[in-house]
Every structure is written in C-alpha cells, then in structure tokens.
Length: 449
Image (cartoon, rainbow, N blue to C red; front, side, top):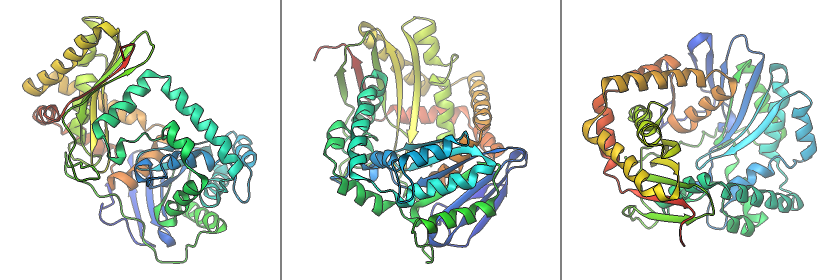
C-alpha cells in the first residue's frame, strides 16, 4: 500500500500512519506536539542509519535584506550552540566514524548524519541542538562569511555551474526561485547578523520541522529522542499547533513575477569566461514537482538525453564528435519548473550544437518516440530507481521530499508501475508542450564581451 499524505492536510498532533514497503521495510509517520513531523523507514538487517532534520525554508523564502541567509545558516549551525562548540559538534561524529553534513535548496534545508544504529541517539541530540540552539556568534559569522565567499568563488570558477545558475536566473527572472541558492558575493557581504538571526528565528520552528530517518531505526524510540532533544533545546512542544501546510502548487506554466507579470519571451545570455570549452544550455519552463506528468518527463529526458543511447548523445557526440558531455535535465518546484538541454563544446561549434539539440527536441515533439526507445528508457529508469534506493541516505531523503514536496510516499513497486504506465503518446504530447514554451539560451565561454 502507499502511504498517502494529502497535500492539503499535513496532519494533526498525535496522528500516526504506518505502511509496509518493499523488502520488509516499515514506514511510520507521527506528528508530535508542536507540529513536528517524524518519519522513519525501518530497514531489516541494517546496522547503520541516516537521520535528517528538514526545515521547510529555502532561498526563495528570503525577504529583501535577508538574501543569502538560508545558505549562511547551513554553515553557521555547525559553528556552535549554547551547549556545544564547533569542535564539540565535529568530534561527536568523528568519534563514532559518522558523517554529518547539510544541504540548502530553493524550498527546503536539511541537516543530516549517517551513523551506526547504536549512535543514532547522539546524532539526534547533536542535530536537534544545532537546529534549536545555534548561537550565530558574530565572530564565527564573520569567519564563515569569508568561507562562503570562497565557496561562491569556487563555483564561479566552474563554467558548468555558472551556466546552470545563469540558466535558472534567465528563465525564472525576477521570481524568488531565480535567485542563486547560495546568494551572491554582494548579498553575502551585505547581509548583517541581525538579518540572519531574524531569518533563523522566523523559520526554524516546530511547525516547520520534519525529522526523517532510515535504516536500523526504531520509530517509537526516535520520536522520544526527538521530543526530548527539542525540549532540551528550549522549543515549546506543549501546544496543539499543526504542522505548517505544504506549499501551494500552481498549474503548469502559471508562474508569475512579484508584479503579477508573466515570464518574458526567451532570452539569450552570454557570459564571458577564459576557458578552452564553451558551456551552453537551451530550454525554458518545465513541470512542477507534483505534476502527474513528471513520470512522463522522466521518460522524455531518458530518451532525449539520459544516457549513452539517448538521442543527444548519439547525434552530438557519437556521430559528430562535437561534445564530450551532452544531456538534458529538469527540476521541479511547488509552482514551476525548468527543463533544459546542456552541452560542453568547442566555442566555434556552439551554434551547430545548439541547432542539433533543438532539432532533436523538436523532432521528438513532432514524431514521438519508438517502442524500442520507450522500453529502453523505462528499463533505464526502473533500474536507476531501485539502485538509487540501496542506501539509508537516499531513503532518508525520499521521506523528507515525500513529506515536504509530494504529499505521498510510494513503494518502489508503485513508483515502477507509474513509470511503466507512461505511453509514447504522453511523452510526445509533453515534448510538444515544452517545445512551445519561450526558449532561452545561455552560453558561457571565451566569447567577446
């Protein structure tokens, strides 16, 4: 059975759901007092576990004057709490051979750790301490400001990263989703501690917190550990507060900018970098994260640019030798998404490569895919799905995204059924729809200014 979590009803405190998963795994979901949600997937026979604390806030949620705060917090929460120094936090995980890290997205942030099952209480206590009791010490903040600027500089030295970042900005424009997740050097230099602190206290609350764990984990024990750790951190869990509702979803193509306007016609942007190779992306708006056609989009992406047998790989690399790396990609958010085709090639071949990528996209939209391509892509996606869920980290992440994004958790079998249910007609219709969207082009390389 599937563990269905209706998008309109995140659950009331005290609610509890249980569902079986493939291979004897058991998923449970409990809403604690205060609106904290705890989801676990107990995987028989595993001696390790991965636990994550998800906060439903991302870079899109930053107000003016707070830009860069979400990514800043990802760093600063490791820099000390009321009970632990930064070294205490690092030593806690190193002493047990564990790993701890964090990730910032446009719509959520996650702090996670992978440890032995016996060390899971320690991991929960440390991560909960970080989430509830970060000091945001002014001296540490200034030190970390320099670290983040170095991180941004490192990313800016990677022309592929620059191309993808600029593509999102070009397609999404003035919308908050068009801003870089990590901020810009200008916003990181400008944001004061007070703004980061306000962002922290506003969004890091029981009703926004989702704790997920997978592996050798006992659900009841974990709920008790989470409640105890949050209470020790000073969070009030005595009320009947409900979890914060999931983000509203919009119809495909319904994205509007703050002034109510719609995305403009396709834009072309050239970014000069002194590199041997040019990086180019062509594409536009895609599907939302909850669009039912996301499985058809996965098949489309696999056929067009998802592997060595894909059309882009065969036409651009194998037949003509114009690129080493060529693929298509898609990412979805609550109210929009992006879809693009990428290639890295000799600067003088950029126009030819773009023409080939667009040609293959439009040919697929006009003529559809063959039964052999459909069968091959379904097999590719099915294998990738199963292999991608062979570790506790991916299972933990799946739980968090099910709760914060999709509103349902499918078994592997149900996910495979949805992939196998995709038809060639659905793929062609979706390709044709995407092809009608305003098309943007981003080039990064040694071009004239």
